[in-house]
Length: 485
Figure 1: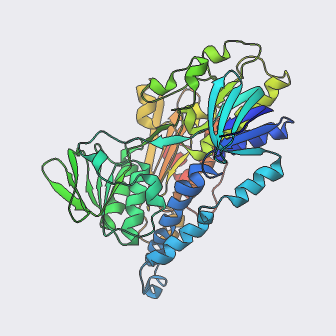
Figure 2: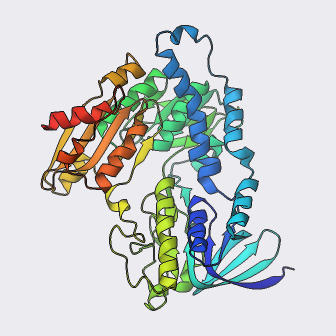
Figure 3: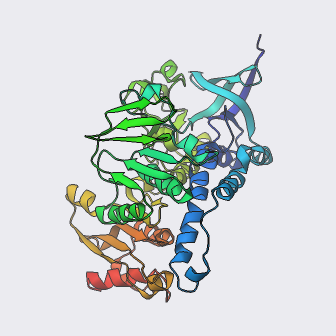
């Protein structure tokens, strides 16, 4: 029989991933008390099953490939990737899936932790079913924040439910490298893990319903496609999966358009959706779990719009990060968390009435204008802001400026460097709306583009930002010259 206890805090956060941690940290810094409810590891998906382990799996191959492309280093390379050592490095990078250091940080920050499942049971009230067998009735003076992240989206494919398959969580935590590896999905996770396992020794086949990396410029995606094929990945684009079957030897047969493939392990990487099920949202008049995909509507600070917050004098329910369903990226979720936490403090102290103004400390404005994202394949793709096609579809007066990345810095990186860059210029205001870079090492170009977009730096002033020589950043000069400056 479980014991019930009641506790009161200023803020209750459901979810101890990077977003939940940041929300709690900001409200505690602002003088409020906070508790986090989490049923899994403190640190969340990114730390243990997504960003961190996937990049650890990709890094050995990127380093080896870079060295193989430089005369002098090429001659020194005599071996291939040691998959066992790479997996051990991944284990170290994830702290061996132990969250002790994260829990210590919570304690040092003055944030309470309840290990268990949180469910909203009424306005400002959360019931936590503790993993210790006890129940906790938690009451919030000011806010409840949903920071539960996202879950993999599994497509409806005949036979898939009867076949053991990996999602990204199992792939990034793999204990061995499969001989034959099939990846369903041509998005970021699909291409990253396809390349990682190909370089670790798998024979990889990737299947995508459309083109590769459909949310990125096609010129950039084509460079990634060439990189995958150079690593031996068999890529099937614009291809449907009709049926999946488990074979007697444990392998899996995947029926495609007019052909089949056999794999020892299947990865389903078909995107993610907000994890909003079983949170008790219906108890406060919200039905987000019934929408497809599930989504809560919010103001610029993450305050949920709906019956739960109709009392304008004391709104209380917030959502941030992947759970908000706007931008499913860890760094952007942490950005939302900082703004949301500060907004909670401001409202608690009477410093914020209504929805915050754009670009204020309490608003998620960058979500609409300058979301940076990186595909950590080899070559990389780094993008921020609007792409040319998107801007044109919105009827904006824009010019696209694009060119191959061919500067002294790129040639220093590799004599056979292949890259591509594009900026999207708002002709009415003469500022940059978007930028995309593709090529080895281009992720480090991205923050300069993000600053230019967020700061709305006029092109005639940006012209005076001189890139160091010889670096890949020289591509900025070439882009502005091509534009006509």
